Length: 71
Image (cartoon, rainbow, N blue to C red):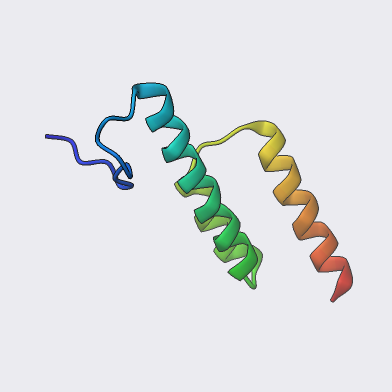
């Protein structure tokens, strides 16, 4: 039996709700990882761990560029 990494909060979720819950958890984890990451190298490791949309990639890259400029 396949056990998902994030277990759903309720058992009676339908598939669409379940997917959105999973996606929200993954986005949250990516966000936390991005906030915590100090170097691009560590970010790249996090980057490879997930597959997500192009727009989201761009927003993360922009936020990193802004953060690098501030230093």
